[in-house]
Length: 332
Ligand SMILES: NC(=O)c1ccc[n+]([C@@H]2O[C@H](COP(=O)([O-])OP(=O)(O)OC[C@H]3O[C@@H](n4cnc5c(N)ncnc54)[C@H](OP(=O)(O)O)[C@@H]3O)[C@@H](O)[C@H]2O)c1
Image (cartoon, rainbow, N blue to C red):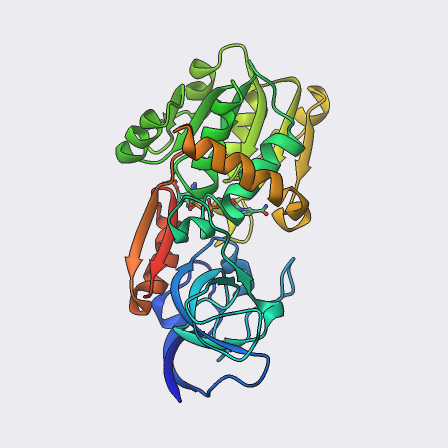
């Protein structure tokens, strides 16, 4: 019998989550039954969407249960297998993060594909995160060479993937991010214009300076005043891809945008999406990501916390701007 630690949701946060909303418990994991494998997690992902699962109300995903281990993307190694499709040593993807060990059957596991990338990239740029940027820009916005694309949360996991894909597709990219380190990172990625929104008193004016003729596409990760500024600086017939609104996840809603009528007056199309509806793109996405990595056009950046003890703080830091690229926790 293996002993495993797991992070549980102890109480539902109100506003910004606090460490006291979580606890680490120790559980016994019995040997796997027939048709199951036992997995030791090596890496787990922390993601902004997990915040909505901490609320009691049913959102677009089921709420986390109080007193139970939370769940989320993870990469682990099979330690014992009682299923013919897995062997000890196989690397597997699951949604059973926030714990050290677990037993599961094949329907909850996916073998990690052999890409010439570090294994944890499957939780980031070569996984759900990268696919979000890819689907949003290429399928929903259908960006074209020469277009001006504004991306908020540009130095984060989805944002930095979106910036790089938009550059690969020949767009002029404007990224917004908070802080000098993030600006330097976006310069490294070749982003054309970078707006440090934390040091700008007028976000709209800063975006206007970067794109005096207006923006064709806005990829929104942040919502609130970023969305408001993007509406003001959009061209007629601009396309807005609404990926996320992290500025609102810990609040009861934001006052902004105040200028939503611009959707009408500028004939803007706004399209919200969830990556889970675009998994049919995965095969093409993996192929493109492999090519772009090999040619040096795409780079993965990660902020790594170590150990389950630091998983909660890694999650909380997402809301404080504490990550460059994908925020991950290394467990193994
Ligand atoms: N639609 C989908 O299927 C889908 C899939 C994945 C992710 N998403 C969404 O995409 C967005 C980005 O996710 P991610 O995983 O890439 O996270 P992320 O951007 O790597 O991490 C969060 C970043 O958001 C910024 N931020 C946090 N609080 C903020 C606030 N109050 N105002 C402005 N910026 C704030 C911070 O960057 P700064 O320091 O630059 O402020 C922080 O580093 C999120 O909204 C997420 O929910 C959607």
